[in-house]
Length: 268
Image 1 (tube, one colour):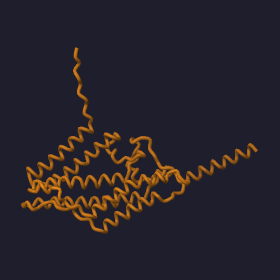
Image 2: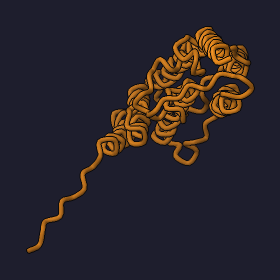
Image 3: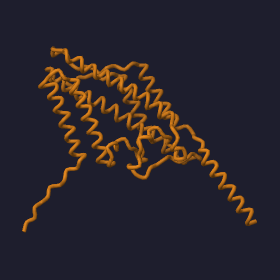
Image 4: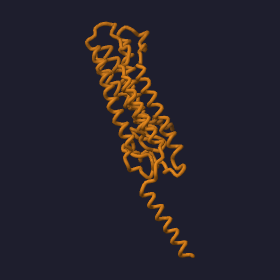
């Protein structure tokens, strides 16, 4: 007797990722191509769809919706969070801008979009920080009398407070001012840049000419690039700087040494 084959169950992250891709595509076709002059709505929908897609990748790999920003130490990474945030913002903008240019009668040069050189520098700084952070910690942790690096047993142990905590095991519960400073700087600049992009798309609602193309990303000022660069440099330098052992560790070592001397004296 033939047994009926049961089709494999589609995993939730895969289903959600597929839905995000479909929704993002339909948003750009519908809001821009069919209803027209709804570029802002198309961009916001694409932005959300890209966030969902990224979350699905994290869920599939680390079994958490925020798994894509968990590092090799099973902790939430600030440098990964920044890189993912900038990538999602720029990618969703590029997708909607290309769709707008196609529907505006310029399909051949739809991707002829200038990305501001200052924005490219910011992306390069974020990438460098992403690569340099684990490299510095791997060279530093436990070497030359330095404290060991904090590590969690599994991705499920990661906490959002990790992005504000020290990377050293003996001070893992202490706040890291370099992380807090960088998080706030990134949050302010990223939010302001998202508003600039939104205003750019909103300006197309009043445009009735095919000449209204998305030809360039909003520019970032040189001072903002310097601010981001200094923030990241301070973040990496703070990681690389030698850290003295925590007071509790020193006291524990002193107590152990004292007990050892007492035992030696008793034996003698």
